[in-house]
Length: 226
Image 1 (cartoon, rainbow, N blue to C red):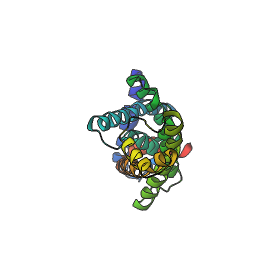
Image 2 (tube, helix red, strand yellow):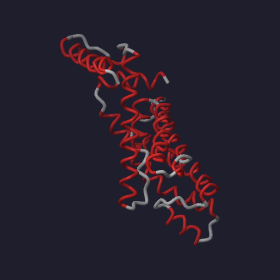
Image 3 (cartoon, rainbow, N blue to C red):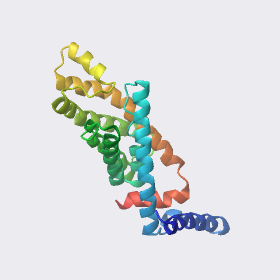
Image 4 (cartoon, one colour):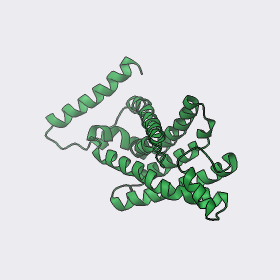
């Protein structure tokens, strides 16, 4: 990001703050046109932040040996405030980055799960459904189901059901109970994903509701345009 681009963002938010305070007339900030360059620069800045949050969550989960993934919180947040396709990009690049850094190519195909999280959360926000606790729970279920349906065949056919994650212990329990490997990898992931993606979706909802009006004019309008 160049100095000029940074100044554009700072100047944009500064001008909007002054305009809102010094003008007696009530202004709908969402109706004020935001320069495309500001949105583009903001997107360029915020996607790496989402990726960093995902990577940090994944590292924390591995370090603490948690039966969770914690690698899609950033994806859900970015999708909620920037739209589904930016969320998809964040999810895919998260897994590519983790594969490069850790030297473990197993992360790459699971990028489709991360992308699904971004797509679903982004679409729920875009169509005005991500506004209360009920729809947050519905979104979490949709995301968990999509992730489990995508991850199960990947884990089964590419890695024999074992991926090195904490969920492998649950897969083993289902196999011992007589489930076939595809069924075991799916059902083992459903409760894990309900909790894991539930956390991601709730965090995204809280961040979205806490977003300042000046940022909403950049992010939510961008989301609606996608």
